[in-house]
Image (cartoon, rainbow, N blue to C red; front, side, top):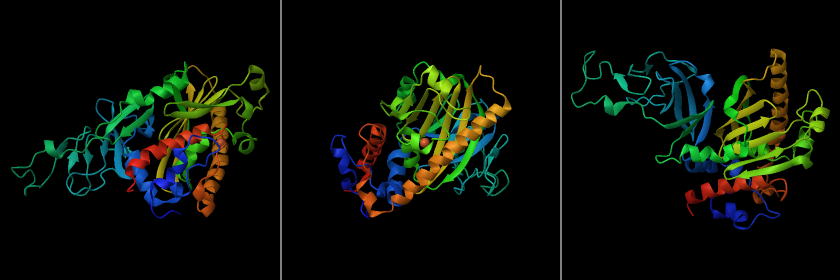
Length: 374
Ligand SMILES: [Fe+2]
C-alpha cells in the first residue's frame, strides 16, 4: 500500500479512458485515504443519510455519521426533518445515542441542558449556581445546537456539511433526467432489508451497483437480464446502467427472478436507486464506517396504485436479500484483493461495460486531488 498519498494515485485519470486501469488498492484500504474522502467528499457533498418514513412522529430522532462527524436527524414540530451536529453545547457530549423519540425537548443526560426540536437552547439548570441562575453574559440564543443543511426529496434525506452547498435541485437534476417520466415520488415504502455490515470499502458497493458486466455471472440464479441488452447511464453525476427488455423477454423470465426493464442509478457520492417496471423502486443506503467497512440497508417501494399481498412483498424482500448477498460476497473478495501489491496499478476496466465505473472513479479522483499534500 502506498504510504504517501500524492498525485501518482490518479495518473491513469490523466489519460482518456481506453483500456485503462482503475483506482489503486490504496484508495480502498488506506485509512488516510478514507479521511481524505471524509474531508473532500463527504463534508462537501449532498450525502444520503436516511429515510424520512423512519422518523414519522414529532420528536423522532436518529443518530447518524457523515464524514466521521456525529450528527442527528429529527422530526420537528412543523413536521419537517432537521439535522444537527450531535453535540451538546455545554460539554460537547453526543446528545442523541440511539433511534428514539425525545418528546418535546432534546435533553443532554450529563447536566440536563435541553433544546427544543429546532435546536434552540431552552434550559441550562444550575449553570450560574442556583437552579434557575444563569451567568449575566450568557446567551441562550448563541448556544443552541448547530444546524446542518438538510433536504428531503420524497422519502430520502440528504445533508450537506459545506457552508456554501451546491443547490439541492441542481444536485438531483441529473437523476431526474435519467428517470425520465418515472415519477418516483408516487412510490410508497413497503419493506426494509437491513443488510448490516459489509466488509468492504463503500466505493466497491457503488461500483458494483453501476456496472452490468457481473450480473449474468453473479446473479444467474436471481436475475434474468441478458448483458447484451444493458447500456451505461452517464448523465452528469448520475451514473449507472439500464436494461430494456421486451414483453416476450419479461414473460419468459422465471417466477422467482428479476427479469424486467430496469434502471440502476446513483448520485455521487452515495445515493443508490433502482427502478423496476412496472411498479417497483429500491433505494439503498451505503454508510461508510471506515476504509474497509460499510453499513447497508435497502428499502423497497411499490407504486401507490400497485396491490401486492404480504406474501408477494416478502418474496420481493427475499429476492433482493439474495441478490445483495451475492454482491456482498464479490465485494468482500474485491476488498481482500486490494491488499495485494498487484492491486496498486488498479484493475483493468472494460472500455465497454465499465464506463460508469471509470466515471465514478474520476469523480473520486477530482474530489480528492485538491486535498493532496503534494
Ligand atoms: Fe450485482
